[in-house]
Amino acid sequence: MSFVKQAPVLLVIIPLLSALLVNILGLVNRRYCLPVAILGILGSFAASVVTLIRVIENGAISYRLGGWPPPFGIEYVIDHLNGLVLVTVSFVSLLAVIFSKESVKQEVPEKIPQFYTLFILLVTGLLGMTVTGDAFNLYVLLEISALTGYALIAMGDNRALVASFNYVILGTIGASFYLLGVGHLYIMTGSLNMADLLTILPGLYSLNAVFIALLLILVGIWIKMAFFPLHGWLPNAYTYAPSAAGCLVAPLVTKVSVYIMIRIMLSVFSPLYVYSIIGLSETIVWMSVIAIISGSILALAQTDFKKMLTYLIVAEVGYMVGGAWLASAAGLTGAILHIVNDALMTLCLFLFAGIVIYKKGGHQLQDLAGLYKKMPVTMAAFTVGALSMIGVPPTAGFFSKWYLILGAIDAGKYHFMAALLVSSLINAILFFKVIEIAYFEPKVDHHGGETEKVIIDEAPLTMLVPLIIVALSLIVIGLYSGDIITNIIQHSVPAGLL
Amino acid sequence: MQSIISSYNYWIYILLMMIGLYAMLAKNNLVKKVIGMSIFQTAIIVFYVSTGAKEHATIPIIAHGHGAVEAAVDVAHYANPLPHVLMLTAIVVSVGTLGVALAICLGIHRRYNSLEEDEIQEQL
Image 1 (cartoon, rainbow over the protein chains, first blue to last red):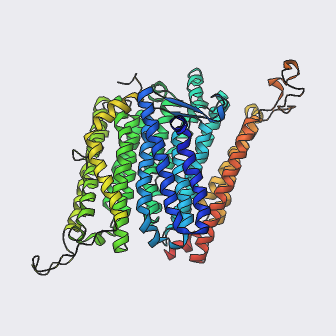
Image 2: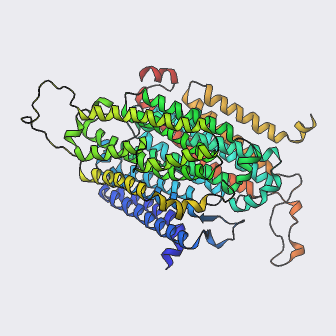
Image 3: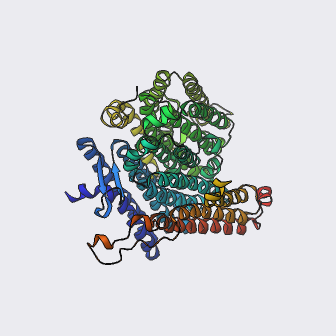
């Protein structure tokens, strides 16, 4: 089957070409835009599922672009780790693009072709970042996804332009730091291929330049993933983005950056170097403790529902960075599982926020009042997302948090465990506050529950169905998380770790 | 002192980078921030290009036909072309970033009628 063989490259090429097609067809008739966008993303979803199945059956795949052998040509490498991330990215963007139909019509009616072109290009960039095995190629795709992200966010309401401008400035600093780090590695080794770097670098571990290269790359990626002291651009940018764009950007961009951090740690540098030789684990775990606590507390202080969610993303990034740096197998497993779970949970909550914006026109906490009666299905799905965010079994959020806590105990980093528990507690307070607001009517002046007519007023199906699917998938992934770990994640955790 | 002179290209790129970083973080005018961003990216291009440069280097082209090993250029004599080629891509990326940043500045100016950060903050 040639589709199966070519799937690693098709999953990037199909959306890339459909972005072009959307742009051209948009000139003819803007009704063509959405179907082409959905088909493009569906194509890459199929290709990533096929690729993941092939990886599970036969092990890692190396795809040579243009047939050039690896150290000279660009290579796409798909192993268990990025196979899983690929499926997550394409699944989330598929749901987000279906959701966008009504929301885009309401929020950016005059820019539909441009919106979908940027939307698919962003997906292309994220998939490319995930699939590539070349450090410089990764930079280019990082900038493709960042540039389209800036433009998508700038399409939002009044304050989006200023938020997007700050994102441009900080995002460029981040990408430039990454590029600088790759430059240091290139000077030291003469190679840009990740597998090649992994074999050359051990002889150079004692050099300062290699250490500086790692630091530059880490700081660059931390800016991109909004790791706590570097998170300044995120809350405003994600809050004021158009809600359909927010549904794509918020779940995926930070998670793909976390994936890249793990990829750089394990496949460019080795676990031996990042965990033992340089001795940064302790510091970075403390930094992520601070990130988790401050993100949660800042979320508690918000009256704007969407902004509250953005601060929760900052806290969740702390979970994953901390888990990856615990230097324990369970912690790394938890961090990888949390990439999948957090992408779905964030998608669930942002889809919900998008529906509220569509129906109520605002995203303050007060706009949620009385929604349980008016939109029972939407609120049920939101409740699943909220429970997963808190970490209630059997939702997916519980299992990754469980592994993170196990990892913290294995590594003896009890402050990280305490931070996870405090953050779960704060999440519980937050979401029960939201549920309370949504459960009761704004003004209850008489008991007339029976006589008062309750009008069920759900969102259109194109918005509701993605929300229901993602809520169900949170439960399904929770129930099957054992299988995901034994069949997929286990293979991407290096054997030397405890 | 000797180490500064022998690796002056690195000192120049660090100086340029700091100028750019200063402009990005400290300037009040949005266009000046964008100019700072451009200087910052150019600094990295200078860094890459200077690593591939070499005194009295030739171009990496095999002079006389295929298969003639003795006619091929010696590795020690030519300038490494790869960093330069990489920077062609990086220049394209930085032009793209500049375009997006200026477009956003244009939008901000249309809406707030100002490009000074403090004046925009007052209107928010």
